[in-house]
Image (cartoon, rainbow, N blue to C red; front, side, top):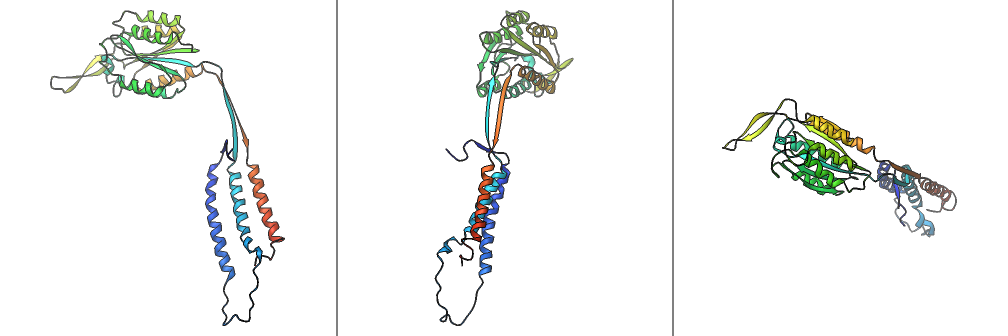
Amino acid sequence: MSLFSGIEFAYPGFFWLLLIIPLMIAYYGWRNQQLQGTLGMSTTKSFGVSPKSSMRIFRHYGIVLRSLAFIAIIFALARPQTALSWDNETTEGIDIMIATDISGSMLSEDFKPNRLEAGKNIAIDFIKNRPDDRIGLVVFSGESFTQCPLTIDHDVLINLFSDIKNGMIDDGTAIGMGLATAVSRLKDSEAKSKVIILLTDGVNNTGSIPPLTGAEIAKQFGVRVYTVGVGTNGSAPYPFKDQFGNTHYQMIPVDLDEGTLSKIASITGGKYFRAHNNTELSQIYQQIDKLEKVKIAVTQYHKKTERFLPFAIIALILLSLEFLLSNTIFKGALT
């Protein structure tokens, strides 16, 4: 097993001090050269050759021990720790179906760039913030279908979400059908919490299932529905093209059935929200995120054990060894 297996460092920035080691060695070499000096003479015949001490091979023991001690001190300062942690999940998590309106009126530009794109972008951010939940997608207009079933693979879900657009199905606003399709995807779920986020900008005007009937079905299967009505007050700019392909705008009334959306939320134990712009819609998704996160209770345990002491002891031993050697065995012997 590696010496540092399972070890993390609280202050890794101290490792930059290791750059001092080469400077220490360079200074040591320069100082040795300065201390040796030179002596000039005409002849050396009168001087015998003195035998070299066998201890000379240890002449650099000081810088070696000091460098190793300095390295050990740096490791101690970086505070090595071992971590022990585990999670005890006390619930089965949350399954969420997002049911979004893709009818023609969702192209109105009281949201930027329009209601449909704003809803997509903000919902995708919501999905990214819930990596542990199964999430799926239903789209509805004149009818409804499942764009993505419940999945933990959020990359696939986000790609499918990005692909939705107006015109995929016949126009209209089948709120009841969209709700019923989302419920059918959740009814067999074993999750502790089952949620639908239903977003629309209109009034139910087609489909074989009335919205309140869809709400009663959701209630029977224990599905909570958060309804979101989008659109400014009064009227909103709606783009259309003339025969030459030029884009023009006309103001169309914002016709939102807030009463029905509120009843759907009330029947199922959810909540109704109204968004007049991008910022409010983003805040609504944040509120839903917080409301649903409190449904999961997770017990987390983390314990860290300090491991700097062995490095401090090693540094002390190395420095003590250098002091003892320089004052005993090697005292005056390395010349």
